[in-house]
Picture 1 (tube, rainbow, N blue to C red):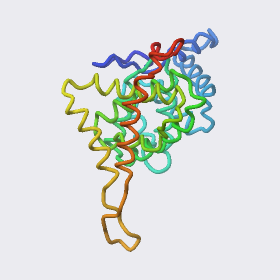
Picture 2: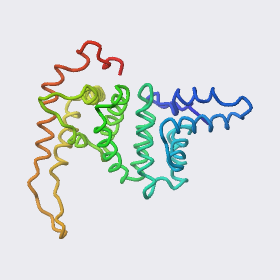
Picture 3: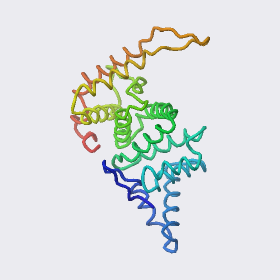
Picture 4: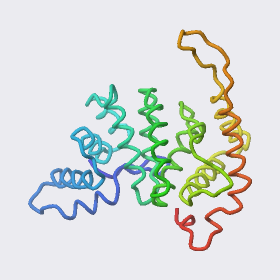
Length: 259
């Protein structure tokens, strides 16, 4: 067990934080007991304030690899009902707290969403909640969440760039954390594909998803006027044309380069 998983992208389970916590445990404990104690200490630090969240945290952080974590979550009945919401929220919190981005979390999230597609909606809601915290968010967290979203969007199992529609992009200025998030996201997307048309396709999918048919309360379908797609397009165009020129990477003492 424990923090030794490597995949093709260099993903590794666990964090250096877990290793540090292990060093503070009693020498009389067995290795497994020390690891369990370290994970519980770390769970408390991350404010995992329910038994369910602590259990999910220990599975995600203490499993051998992505498949091991997934199987434990399934066996524990944690990918159904309300429990699945906690799984997604704990996973994203763990990813955001890493000292450097770890693709392990993206692989696990993809595996979970493949098994339980409804988790894509929870991912969307969790990101929307995160966007509300830009003003108080640390640079590292913004960068980690951006890279995770880029991985999930490229995977194309349900989440797309339409999730960005709730971010307010205007001429009056944005928080540096919001700019870092978007810059890291778009940079990662551009670096992922050799063909620019593939990136264009991701944007087009996001704009199109905002204009899908809606259902009336009576069950009939109709095309309702909805400018979400156009609004998202205008917002992202504004960011790419205006804010990239004043990117944090070009601002003195900005933390952009370290993320």
